[in-house]
Length: 528
Image (tube, rainbow, N blue to C red; front, side):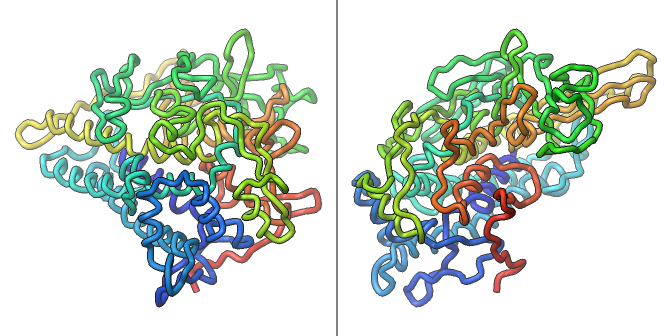
């Protein structure tokens, strides 16, 4: 649990925030950009948080008064700097650094039970290598309290409570509201669920006031299921493990000219999967996982924190509006028109970018809860939810302690040695989303092993039916139009969309044009 919390903090501050923030420090009362920001490729400064964007949003009158009071009191907002954008950037840079310490506390909490973190080596089948003491529980709860204080509550921006992840995420949503309509995918959500819990998990704070508790019918802490809508109250469907299939039509594996497997099958279940490299003109090494929603209709599904929360019912299209933020859209709301001549407050902000006269026209897109900002917001809210879950499970472990130590139950995990083929699988939720491993054993030896991981679900290529994966769909935007890009030479909009998924790939996203790679930027290995 602590590793999930750590991963969510990492994603927002250290993998996403620099797509929006100009790393800065306040020197002598004047916000000053860091000339060579650490691991941060930069485009024109007008793409990021700046004074013009802040004043344009403030001019709408939709920023919470308490938030305005906090922001306007930041060092550098007023004299001598008189730079609201620089002041906010410097504040968020400080939060970036503070988050590093909080991530360390998450690792410390995990190491109490696993020996070390993040690469824990202390788990064994059926249990852990060390018993749990009352002191362990006390130490973990003390760390959890510090983490909870940093994560904060969804209403922190409204109440003017800075210094929390929730304040920062909602602030970003207010400063870049167009991203509620950018990066939309299919609105197909899949979650495999995790954790054993036959009772209820009480929720505290704002989430407790909205949802009270978690009590899932499948006796999991996080619900297993799939939905085809992020609307509140959308029905949850049960996951049938035999309806998962993978296509290799767009992948670099051996197949027929029609894109089927060599035996003619268009999709194969992981237990029957084949992974025989044979790259030709395909564009990915990822297979294309799909789920049969009925009668052989294999569809792409998004996985991750947004999917988990939508399936669970603790996130839905318009939840930030319900939480008291009128700038956040309600379900079905049309997007803003920021194009030249629209008169939208952000039109002039986009016009500050060299070669750009206005922003995107998103009026033809209805808000559906499956956008770039929804993925970021859902991850932050789940981070807060998981803190309550962690407290619940620590309490449960504490109740099992007898004579100073928690009871354990190591099971017999002997692998059967038989000529009959045995099958096994494991399904859970990694921080990035639904994860499953599939195995076949014969005569005590592994004959097949296939893994279907979160990034495969999200970043996969087109399947045998020509259906692109969720992330590729997000980059298309309105079908036939593509995601709006202000300047093709500096297409920051594209990594903003892809980063919202948190792919588990090399720590870079390469942007390629038909003529080659787009503008390259210097990324120093160390500050300086």
